[in-house]
Length: 207
Image 1 (cartoon, rainbow, N blue to C red):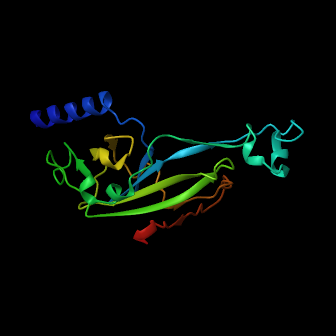
Image 2 (cartoon, rainbow, N blue to C red):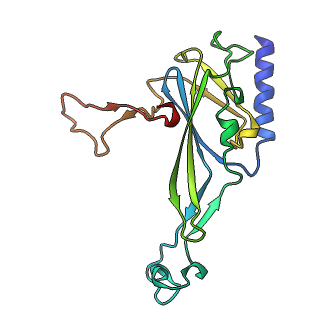
Image 3 (cartoon, rainbow, N blue to C red):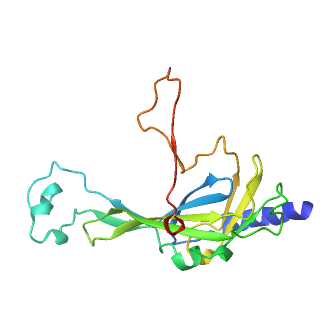
């Protein structure tokens, strides 16, 4: 047990001091259920020119009507966070390792997921170079269900360009958000007898 704590401490230290520069942005890790994890990555973002008070050629919204709009200095700009997510490595089960001091199903040696699925979407796009800001969701099907109240360490191979090599989380299905649960965007009546939600998720090439 002491050796496991030492290994975990070293892993955390390495992750905090080394890091991965010029990589995609790690957004979150969320449980789809107790045996599937969803990792969210963002390659970049678009900085918009929202100043619609400007007028004339190449200013504000009027650049849409300018023949050489692509030369306008105030057009929307795509800003990458670094190298995009490497989809080849990101979809390999061997690129991930789940370790747990509390859960003997994973233990100090850790276990890799049995399957990995990917969903990628164009989230927004700039008019400058027509560059899309891609978001990626990687779904890890785990060999054993996660246990409530247990701490887990997720190691990620740096070749994925994931922007992170170690993520620590405590699993609790009652307090963690799940992307598979869709609730009302406008809320519910306080006195409603039933407050319903839909449960579904498209996992890209995982169905």
